[in-house]
Image (tube, rainbow, N blue to C red; front, side):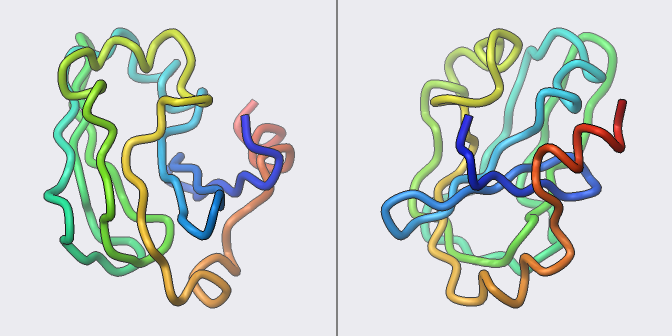
Length: 124
């Protein structure tokens, strides 16, 4: 898990690494969804604003939309999750990010995001 991880109230996380921002779903979100069976991710080079829906995740219990915690351009998607979405159940962190983006407005967009430790206290 990245030490500089920030979380949104809609349960997405974001962290910076090598000048890019990685977005995924928190462990709390995954535990609430249950067994993940399908993930739909956006096209590379698509651009989204903060709060916009960029994907869908389905479990045996429910389907949920995934929101952008910060705005940016999709540089890469995590291909292994398209083939094996159930990997998210094992560990939503580490290499289980959903998309990698470039985010020119990170400072502005991230002001309302919470550090993971604060987020975790609030959802428990």
